[in-house]
Image (cartoon, rainbow, N blue to C red; front, side, top):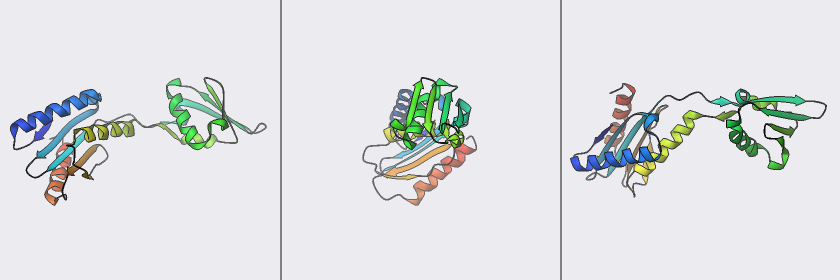
Length: 186
């Protein structure tokens, strides 16, 4: 972790704040590295966080079996992995009303019609979940009042430039430097 600031004490304080927020959100093991640039004279905060690789997205067909009974015109969903039941229900409730989903028992759901196409729907995406948690951390770390934010994030590096003024090209260049350094393991 690098917190760059001309004020050594200010850098230490921000490092403590960042570590505390990461601890509160249990992000420490999910992040490879972090670079921050703070300049109170030129009100800017640049933050780049490299996320660790996550497992692949989980598809519906990986955690449940879907079958269509043409005679009854019903799609039956048998849950293989109960850990994903809340995600499956959330996904279905976005598409159907709760009244349209019949749940005769904990591991079985039924929907009127042929919905076997749900097999390819994403039930859980660990990368998106981690990215959402990292953004949550960033918005807790940013100084209050820094409402002008430019997101320069890439696939595995979440990067923002924040200020309460117009964003300067030099700050964007600094963010790109951090992205390059994090990509190259520096």
